[in-house]
Length: 236
Image (cartoon, rainbow, N blue to C red; front, side):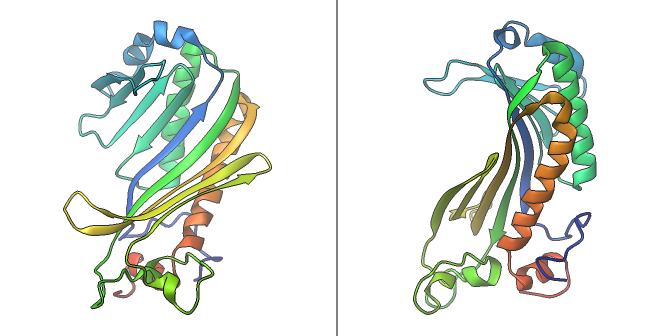
């Protein structure tokens, strides 16, 4: 089963996902800052770990409510709302919970129009350098850089960031070698597909479409060899 013929319901046993998130953005609503406590009242039992932060030079506080194990949660401010999971078990349960929480959010603040919906996958792919100290990138990802010979498949380091505008959205992708939390090297594959400018009533349909496209992108980024590995079919 190749990259163009996969089961969208499959969750790979050795999947490299460390986080999945879905976010909506909308025109600024100051009432959200004034009445942020409403989300704690509505979802505080499910997401009891609460924090408030503000990035440097930002105008709005970001409110984050996480589960007791911090493996799932919501984040919101005056112009956006997101739901994330770090222990991803599949798109059906994720979409169900995302829609439930965003509808609770909408009940409090009445968001009518969405300026951006994005589905984001963050993957960490562990690797071991070859005997020349190079990254065996071609085993894992099909980056398809037009370089002489096989150079793109065995770089010493990699840091790629590209933004592809679409008719009504965009694709954002970041690929680089990083140190994971365990101190070992890994390839970061962080990609985000977005759909722009639609009414709130179309949220469910567009969320399903965003997931399908983001998953399709992942399947196209990885090689058949790596897919077989994360499916548990063979070593790499």
